[in-house]
Amino acid sequence: MKGWLVVNEFLQNQKFSELTKLFLSAAQKANLSLTVYTNAELLADTKEILKQRPDFVLFWDKDIVLGNYLESQGIPLYNSVDAIRLCDDKRLTHIALMREGIPSPRTIMAPMTYPNIGFTNHDFFKQVERELSYPFVVKEAFGSFGEQVYLVRDRKELQQRIQGTSTTELLFQEYIPESRGRDVRLQVVGDRVVASMYRYSDTDFRANVTAGGKMKNYTPSKEESSLALRAARAVGADFAGVDLLFGAEGPLVCEVNSNAHFKNIQTCTGVPVAEEIIQYLCEVQK
Image 1 (cartoon, rainbow, N blue to C red):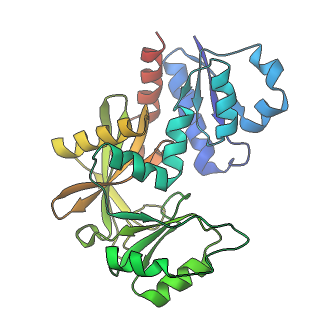
Image 2: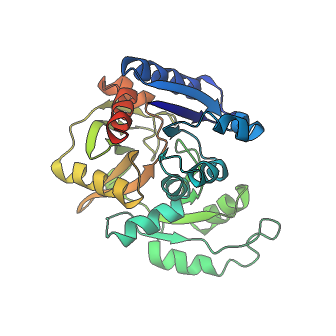
């Protein structure tokens, strides 16, 4: 059995390349042939490369056009293009969770407009303010590591934040005060939660480690584990990093990350996440 690991040509810094090394090491331990290609290499010579078609692709990228092409050739992708698409756009993630009745913060999607036009009328702000009340969270639909997530406390901050973003693809989300500066990341692989960590910050409402938060090992409750598994299934992910908030009435799903950067949780817990994912792929491909 042989597989491909597809990564992005233009994300070759240490944060991403170290994951590639972890996957290759895990594949070697599992006696699995795993060849790395970037999305640019595949697009440059697709027909020639497909002569060496793999049994599966570990698709560690968000190039869904390439992913669609590979799936059209009958090659299994993990995660699938649909799962990556649903997770990559936080608006679609919310809809998928809502469809399955999975508890998450109250969310309102910004109306669609065109980038060269922007929001020329702010009347819809009134409805958002009535539904959520200040403070609430503004998120860019596409973003990672908590870097495109903002807390606004009044109309002035809301307008400044909207004007300061380079995108019009936004969503507005209920602020959960009980979870300020803390959340839980659960790593799902197949039908198991293989690792969990508690993230916390004394200086920011976000708990992301990249944003300055800290982390420690965490043992999730049965409810939290069940919720993470349901969330991963809702978006069709074989593996995912699921972020839970501490709601007043129980845990809430904040985000589902199809290509979760697992180095931190692996360092925190000692669980070899790359090996868990490779072992899962070996089992489903038997």
